[in-house]
Each structure stands twice: as structure tokens, then as C-alpha cells.
Amino acid sequence: MEQPYAYRHRPLVEPDWRRLPGWREVTAADWEDVQWQRAHCVKNVKQLRELYGDLLDDAFYLDLERDQAERATMSLLVPPQMLNTMVPDAVPSTEAMYADPVRRYMLPVFSDRDSVWPSHPYSSRDSLHEAEMWAVEGLTHRYPTKVLAELLPTCPQYCGHCTRMDLVGNSTPTIDKHKFTLKPVDRLDAMIDYLRRSPGVRDVVVSGGDVANLPWPRLESFVARLLEIDNVRDIRLATKALMGLPQHWLQDDVRLGMERLATTARERGVSIAIHTHVNSAQSVTPLVAKATRAMLDTGIRDVRNQGVLLRGVNTTQKELLDLCFALQDGAAILPYYFYMCDMVPGSEHWRLAVHEAQALQHSIMGYLPGFATPRMICDVPYVGKRWVDQLSDYDRVRGISYWTKNSRTSVEHDDAEALTRRYPYYDPISTLPAEGQLWWRRHDAGDPVAAQRNAAASRRAAAALTGS
Ligand code: SF4
Image 1 (cartoon, rainbow, N blue to C red):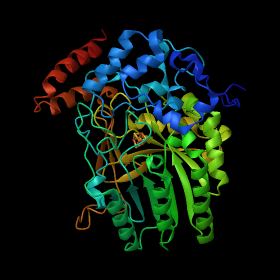
Image 2 (image 1 turned 60 degrees about the vertical axis):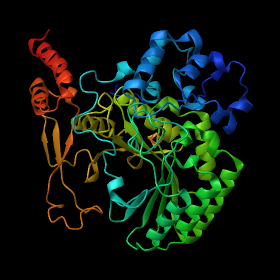
Image 3 (image 1 turned 45 degrees about the vertical axis):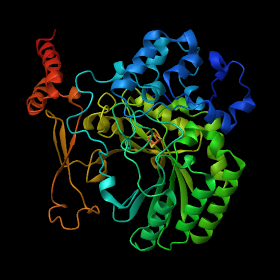
Image 4 (image 1 turned 135 degrees about the vertical axis):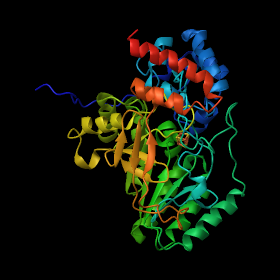
């Protein structure tokens, strides 16, 4: 019987890195060595040219260079493991690189961006107000029973759409990153001290950045201290590197250390899980599956995926289900959540409208086992995570959805209306009908910086209205 999505079990494939000119002589032993991977990350356009050489047109490199100079909120950092999953089954051409889903969010180019509204007028650095809700530096207390501990501001890879672009990674020509002020050791001590004094917190997301960039002894010591706090029952370690640099999680000292933590956790009845961040089926390779298996074998409770919905990457039924099945069937990673891309600067071309995310949720229901069917999530500023169907009202013309909440964040102790107020979330303006786009141009009219953008938008809206 014909179905909208045709399931086929697909074995995972590690693309042959020797198809790229710069890696012709690289051995399997080098490839599986974490130090080799870290030493050969691509950090700039020159290094990308050295790797791909003439396979890509000059225009592509210039497009990337222009994006770094004028739009990028994240500097370039792509490990070989991730680069190798771009155009995985052919020698890459310029056209194939432009169209590749992993390239689209790891090596964003200027021409990818929305030319009229590269940023939503209400986009902002730290769009989820995490720093505002720091109980101590780097420890966000946004929900009643759980906290987010940002242990460090770096990752082995930098994603173009990073929601923590405010803090994570190196500064770019357009974004001067904020810096932690406390020394790392003092910051981590302050977090532990706060958690010891907070019996209402039962769940700690240990994040960053990416915990794979913390020297293992320091990560193990922090998690071991969490395990000594009676009220901490769930610990989630956030690492995109399980996919981007699986070689890290395959190191002997990391495996043995995780085994020690998992053993202690089991004795105390605490769950330790790894949360990773995979956005495209082609990123799930045999090495990723091997690293995941190695982590599960240590005795941790689970490995779950929190992907991000990105237009051009994973926002069709097929792209999303291919990814979910690659995770679930191939790598034993639970397809847990997909977040809508947050409203950070430069993200408009990636973001979906809420109604598009609702349609995607509908499109995947019933294909996966219920426990492995991911929820589409909108992280609404000051509200928190909501399933995309949980909105209370929706103005489809202006693209404004309204949401309510059932708990106070740490900055709302004295806010009598916190639980009755409606909180807005904004669709990308380019997805709105012409009437809605016109409204935003008028709304934006008081902003001199917007004048140039509005002129271009007027031309586009006029063309849409006249059908030309
Ligand atoms: S791995 Fe996570 S924290 Fe690091 S750049 Fe990517 S999205 Fe941001």
C-alpha cells in the first residue's frame, strides 16, 4: 500500500574521507584518533580551500567569507567527522555543497540568509533570557525542579544557529561574545553550593558549550559531586560531540570514567543520560553508533536526541523520519525532541512558523513507536518549552502566537501576573501573507536601521501582490 512516507531499513555508512583532496592519505587509524580530529578541524575559509581545493568554485568560498564578515553569529569550527558527512556519497561539487543539509547549518553562506529580514525585529542575543535567570554565574534556574549548568563556553564544533551565540564560541566580526567573569573552578563550586541549598531541584542538565570540551577529570568530578546531592535524581550530559566528534566518547579514559559515574548513579537510584544534537540522517554514521553503544555499555540510562528544526535541513516529513529512523534503528539514540530554532540574530532563513512545526508533528505521528516519536517544541521566551500545539491564540496574519505558563521562572517571584499573562512568539516574517509583511514594515518604521530593509521588502511585497 502506498504511504506518504515509505519506511526502509537503511544500514549506516561511514563516508570515505579519501574522496576529499586534502584527506587522500589519511588512514583509518588517524581518522579514529581524537587528537587527529581536533587538530584537523576547519576553522577558516583558507583551511576549507586546502581541503576541497578546486572541487568548489571561488564563488562558494567568497559567499562563506562574506557571511563570516557580515552575518555570522558563530565562528567556523567543523571537525573532519562532520565535514565528511557533507555530500556523503559523492565527490562534492559546488552545487551539491550548496544543497547539503549539514553544510547549510555548519557552514552557512551569505546567500543562504533571508535577504530582507535576516533577523526578526524581536530577535535577540540570549533570546531565552538564560543569563537573566542565572542563580549563580552559568546556572540557569528557569523551571521549578530543574536547572541548566553551563560548565564552559566552548564546543568541538560551532553550529551556525546556536541558541547560546551570546556566550558560546569566539567573537565574530558582528558579535562580541560575553565572557564568564568567575574562574572556572569557582563557578563550578558556586553551582554545587547552590544546588546543595536548593532541595526543590531534582534535575540538572550539564551543558555548555559541549561537555566534551571539558577535561574528563573535571567533568567526572562535577558529576560525582552532583551524585552526592540527595535531591538530584536526573543528570543529563549535553554533547553534540557524540555525533560531531564520536572519537572523544570512544577514548578509554572517558569510557572508564563514565562507567564509574554510571555505577555510582545506579547504586543511588539516579539516572544519567546523554543528550545529543543531531539534525540530519546523514550525520548518523557507524562511528556515531559505536560511540553511543560504548556509552550505553557503561550503564548510563539512555542516549537521547534533541535536534533543531532548520529549514532546508530537516523540515520535510521525509527528512525528519529518515533522521528519526537512523537514530532509533541504527544508533539506539532516542529521537526525543525537536526544537524550533530560537529567535537569535541571523536565523530567519532557518526558522519555521509555528503552524509549519504543527504540520510536521502531525506528519510524523504513527510511523515510529510512541515512545520514540519526538515532540516538536517551541521554547517561548519567559515561558519555557511548550509542545507546538499548546498555544492559546494565534494571529496567522502577523505571525504572532500567544502562550501561557504554569510556573514562575526565578525572575518572577514578585510578578502577580506571571501565570495569567499571554507571552508572544513570532513566526519568520517571510512566511507571512503580504498583509502581515506590510504590517511588520510599518511596525518597524521607527527604526532607522530598518529603512533599507523596508525598501527591499516593499519591492518584494509589491511583486507578490501583483503576482509578478
Ligand atoms: S554544539 Fe550546541 S552549544 Fe555548541 S555551537 Fe552547537 S548548538 Fe551551540
